[in-house]
Length: 242
Ligand code: GLP
Image (cartoon, rainbow, N blue to C red):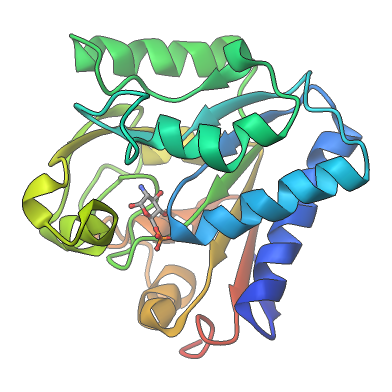
């Protein structure tokens, strides 16, 4: 792992946006793995702004999102498809048919998981996978004790995740979907490069376990220690327990 500690969250987000922009500039037909969550919102804003300023063309780019809630369709404001449209896709020149988010409304979620994996393979695999980190160490929606070699699959979300994400659902845990489709940890590790971005002191302890702790399925993010090209971008608060 290569670790960069930025003085504050703004600079961490800016750096992450520049890494993504450079990826598309140097390889216009890039396959990007994308993430959601609060951390990513500003990163996508900065990426769209950089793309505008530098006329970076996204029309050759293909994207695959990490995960999606089961039961939420594209029109639901808390679905990750909706999030991606709002924060990135509508602001850059990416072609709609080249943006992939697991379909949380698929009648057969297991079949959707298999087909998603197949689509990633057909696209030639992911060049750069952007990742956030859950407070319990999850990457995508791979919760503690997920198989470290797992492929795209259906998961039941941990209580800690329902709690962490309840803010997006009017602080009502009962409204947070309990299941999701997620790329597996194995799928994530197959990306040619990974970019993990974590900010804020609430994640300082888990960042310590991801980077310096033992490789363990109890902390899914620790699997990134196995990745040969993983850049970790932190702010000082998130890095305070290293
Ligand atoms: C969700 C997503 C994860 C993301 C995490 C962190 O659970 N499935 O991919 O990393 O949120 O979110 P935040 O940036 O809001 O802390």
